[in-house]
Length: 252
Image 1 (cartoon, rainbow, N blue to C red):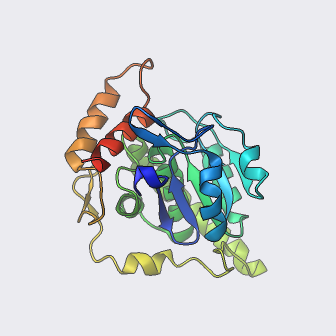
Image 2 (spheres, helix red, strand yellow):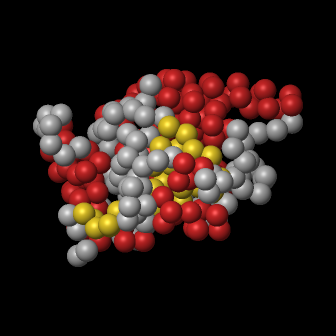
């Protein structure tokens, strides 16, 4: 997870990896290490990542991944916002058709990235919105904040469950379904079964229990959300703020 090592976390082993958005070249900017696409490719190859999905604006050439043999898709939506139904549908379709692991990023790899991965887990593994948010925050602390939580908790759960049931019924007829790197069915429910108590402190608050890995403190996230809600469109974006906050946490 450390920013100097690429700032990425597996959400589902061998299936979904969330990471901070690459930059045109590796450098340190305002104390935050930025990494080029080439910095990730050796790890991706070693760990079965076959597809990259970018959710933020284009700041690097996608050919730097595709020339290395990785598929690359763009599904842009604004920083701090929630995805449209069309974006959710396209994301799920890409992942459903991908054999291997999918690496997903926005700017910080937290808000937009976590939201879409949560949608997939709700659709295909019938997680509740609260379970999906909690699990992703355990794996990648600081994920899914502000209106994105409302989007998942209030609008998407029942619809994604219905879509998942329809998808599974269709796949049963043809004898296939979403698979991981080795072609085996994904075991998200088995992973979650090992977590005795996944809960939210409040409907939109941070998870409890907290992860033992380095994380963003709950009060820091809450303070940040208040700052974002009061910001205009000028100035730092949500992704900028999250990156800075995460870097401060890891350099203590």
